[in-house]
Length: 146
Image 1: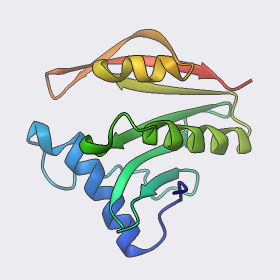
Image 2: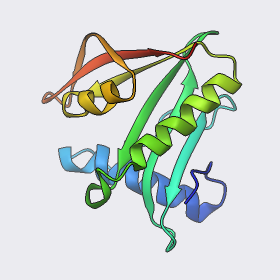
Image 3: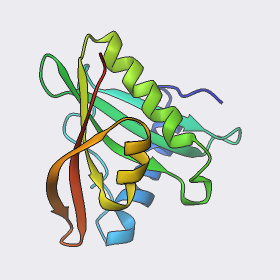
Image 4: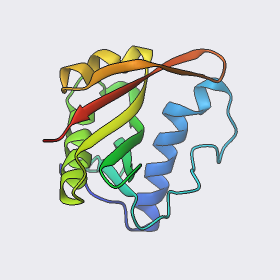
C-alpha cells in the first residue's frame, strides 16, 4: 500500500478522521481541532496510508518552517496498526517531499511516548518543548537531511 497525498473527499475525510481519533478525541478536544489553518497552503504536504477498504491507517503532514527547514506535524497511526512500520512509511514519504523541496532538515515536536520511534529513524532530541492539553509532554526533535 503506497503512501499518497489525499485528493478525493473520501480520502480527506479518512485523513482528518484518523487525525481526530488519535490526536484529539482521547483528550476531549472538540471535533474540528484536528484541522490547522495552514492545512490548505500550497506548500503543505499531506501523507495518507489507506487500507484496501479505504480506512486511514497512518497520516502525517509537512510544511516549510523556513527556507531550509521543514516541520512534521499531525503524525498518527491507527492504534490497532501501530508497530507495523506504517508510521515509518509516512515519515519516509514526508522526508522525501522535504528533500524535493530543497529543505535541509526536518523538525518536529514529539509526544514523549513517540520519542523512541523518531530516534530510531535518525531524529535527535533538541530540548523539551511544550505540554499539550496540560498532560502530554513534547520534545523538539530534528534530523538533518544532508
